[in-house]
Amino acid sequence: MIFKVDLYGTALVLAEFGQCIATGGAGVVISAQAGHRLGPLSVEQSQLLATAPADELLDLDLLRTEQMSDPMLAYQLAKRGSSLRVAAESIRWARRGARLNAISPGIVGTALGQKELSGSHSESYRRMIAQSAAGRVGTPDEVAGVAALLLGPEGAFISGSDFLMDGGVTATYWYGGLKL
Image (cartoon, rainbow, N blue to C red; front, top):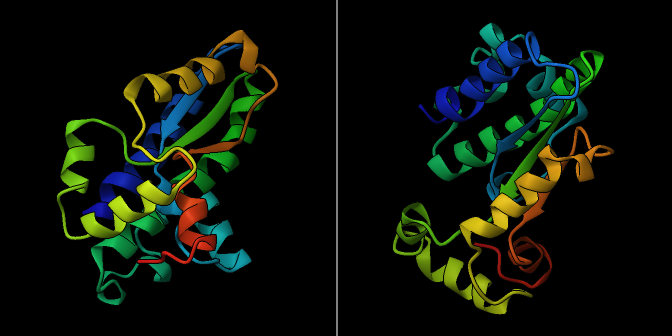
């Protein structure tokens, strides 16, 4: 289900909007910091996630559910794939004179964020947040501010990018010795 919603769903929406986006238009996909916590993929795996036709995406060997014992790994892979698809689709959108980017927020002060902070990884998340540069969760307004930049005229030179905005939590995860 994670792959169907977070990867396939994104691929379908991008493909459909990519056929009708107006000149001067812009789009933003909300991804997640989880995609930045996944270890490296091969060039071939990245290419397939980015460019496989949407109707073939869920058949990729990389996404075989019998290989996914951990829902977190599936979520990380789906979010990495969504960000890769944004980069690839931005090329097609550019042919129509439009831009496309992704935002990968960390834990944000929403109902979903509160659920993450009380879930199975809550202790690790809280430790990473406490030791990150920001030392706190994000706010919906902060995510909206980045979206406004990317969608507005000030972001006219930005396309095909994925903006990690997590207060430094991912940096703490990779380089601060706090891997889950």
